[in-house]
Length: 379
Ligand SMILES: *Cc1c(COP(=O)(O)O)cnc(C)c1O
Image (cartoon, rainbow, N blue to C red; front, side, top):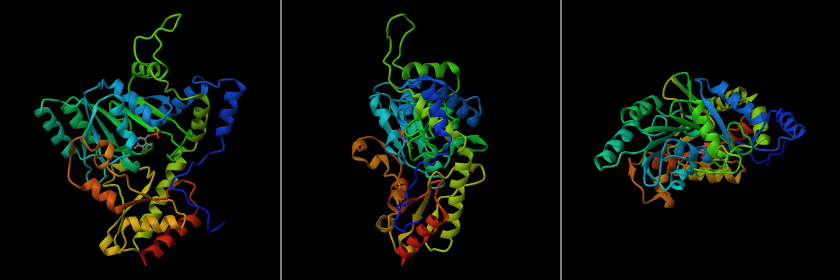
């Protein structure tokens, strides 16, 4: 193997079974947004998630959030509480609807939405005369948020809860899968996620009626009639039968893929014991089970004598695809005018953290090359 091969952050990792399902779609001429692969992929997801969850396969995680917000009843002018520390796709759909995001800072244990700040923000918004319509919590990097506390708050104030589990398929809290706690959950099967359909997502809900509504909205909202009649605005968001075939092939190896990511995380944790000033994000206690989609580190620049940014540049120079942590949404130019509740927790994570290559197909040699490059970068 060449020393100069690029090591990717989180590349696709196929099972080899995907082609079989794609071939079936071709053989039966179901090259459409209908077909057996879609139904079976959804069945596979529902079986994996348990809890009688209903899954609707869509074109992306982003479109899944958009439809979840619509099902939650969010309309123009409503306020939606969002986690600031996330990828922009968690929040953009709020703006598609003309609603207003309200950003909440992270807590230090899981890096996800702080339940204390969440409740403060809700009370403050109610005081100013506007109860938020919905909350979008994220299980970032696969780490479950403090979801039991967040569910309690959402129930107490009777606010709909959407879980963005785009990065957290297979993560769980207290034995229950992420994405199944809220009124709605969403998954992503983008090329860099734990499994991929090249591009794709799923909306998770709790009843067949809601699922039927999701499919209706995702397929142009056609009323029952012999001609095309529409009483609602629809979307073209349904997953196609070929992508769903990739998804079926990927579901066959999902457990293995999660296992590999966890092993890689354990590798990093063991290796970083050797270095001063570098911490790997870890589960706060036994109830939290991360799929470790990405392994993340915090570099204490005083004791490591290197900043996260310097390490990022050093790795990049050596063709290792590390990534700075997400830049919080309240610091993004596109969202700067919206309210933020918090301090500097997510900002500090952004300024001091890195995601390391975490793909389930990472080889031992590659892992060692990553560690020796980090070691040379710390010198
Ligand atoms: C990837 C991702 C999304 C969006 O999913 P797409 O399938 O790329 O549209 C949303 N939220 C988070 C946290 C993500 O990582």
